[in-house]
Image 1: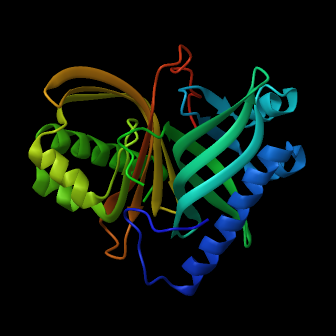
Image 2 (image 1 turned 90 degrees about the vertical axis):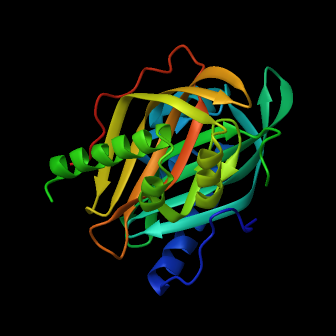
Image 3 (image 1 turned 120 degrees about the vertical axis):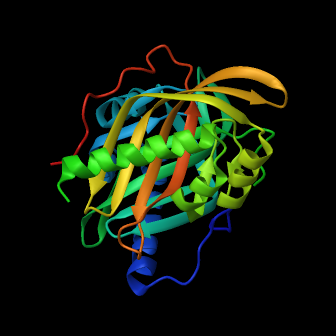
Length: 144
Length: 142
């Protein structure tokens, strides 16, 4: 779901529009790969120097995150995103938004809402890799 | 510009931004912050440039000190810089003094006015994990 968030911009060039669509597509694949524990897709989408700053304060790199998904330590049941906004600067893109993740923890289903900012790098003409994920919990101060 | 010089330049911008925040120098921040800034606090508050400046102007939160560590700058095509690190904020918020720790990612971009870099995005996350200080030493790309 794409919606308007604070700081949204307008009037972009064709390159920016195309880059935004590509990043949105990669981001959709990224979420799907989490839910399906699709390791080949994650290997492709995550940059080698990927850093994942969880809203809990925990940090994962590419291999540690994949290992935790494969082991079932992290099990995503569903990922929904709203207020997604993409800003493209040449071969770097910033995608931010609000997420609602349904996860399985200790055999219990939990819903976690967070705010996230991700950094994407264009690694081929139509291919982007995510290099950073930073999230904060949604709180009573969150206005969208 | 040579990458190491650009990294130093961006670190200088970071110092300017933090100093201006502590000194409540809204004029300086006005120049440093991009018009389309998205500032996502670890508290869950999300602000535009205008809202962030208004908070600084109002002094709530009032930043007394911002200390950073483990700061890593990555520069792409001499046009975008991604900065990560840890920050310790000494603030007064709603009349209460507090110290908060956060891990942050922020982005500086060079706009059409080629020599001016602007602070385009900030996202921080509460830093509470005991391993929070374990970061790679360097992530500057080749």
